[in-house]
Image (cartoon, rainbow, N blue to C red; front, side, top):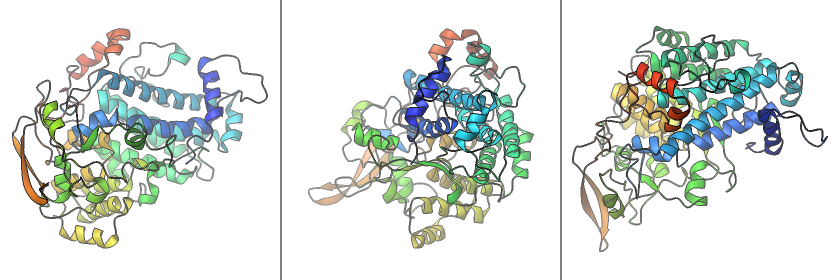
Length: 512
């Protein structure tokens, strides 16, 4: 992985550029931050900060019941930490600022020529790659909070005021409407695609595709498909984009996945490896609802064992796959000692983490072709192949599972999105699937096998998932930051009013 290849040059350059000080005259130091270093850093840093034990581990991984915490249940029960909310905001808008700086370096007459030399790519391609990345980054913001500050390369909406403190001195940006943001992302992605010179390199420092411009076009179109699918229920533009895209415009195999492969070491290892192994933060275990789904004890495929189970979940001390129950108190969770831990493949240092993958595209195509069986099977196969499942096991599983319909397609999509919980959360908010999640305030039993004096014995736990704050379903969004309310109060209040309230239960624009 090339993630830190240019770090020394980049950090010096970013300090100079961001602080707007005079360039150093030392011939051994760079005068301007190279764009290849900015892109390289952002692609890795955004994953570091959104797939770690904080933003992901203490929010969407828990809410989507892939994992639960083993000591403290407050976040499982929807009471997130305000500092995690702040970290997410700072990470998203910090990476957006770096990308906007990259565009500035490619448009400023004083630096544009140097960027061509540094990144071995025309300015227009570097700008296009940045616009695609910006859409992905801002998508996280709008789907976490709703109306948010937003910046656009091509849009002229006066409400697009995010990340403009350097250029326009705007310290209190307006919160643009969700509808305006989504429609601009679709438009700007299309314009970015049309601007790409496919005969040239896209940008050096690219962790995804080593600068392959045609691959970037597939990524951009796949991202357009995701966005359009999200809003199709409320927007004719979303419907039109889906109708426009063909199977060859988007990802066609796992080879097209937009992903970062980490290094197999403590310094540059994958974020969950750093959390569990380097920092020894064994705070999470697979959820009982997810383990039972994979075991074929939950959902529509009762009796069908998912071959991804051994990859996703390790055996416990009894040699069993046992998830941790979702309860209503810390004491209950701490007393449960039979849990399994996440699979070693999931926690390995050199894990590959996807921004977007082929399996997701397949399930979207199935949905938009009347819950098509062929696309459904392609999605299952793509997910399993990505995780290294044997072809014979894939064939046997596909032959055994229930045929494609809304519930089965969306449940398989949920499984495929394991370790991409923010996207799974958005899809739950849009569709209500999977139906396998444990519902709040409904007593349930969890049964598993436990070694009792050398004999595997059926054991039952009685539990109830009690939320904090009275929520009866997953949160629709995070509330706005307390810090933002202090420094940009007028716009925060206006955004909350426009959405119908600054509450966890306030639905996003596209939610039914």
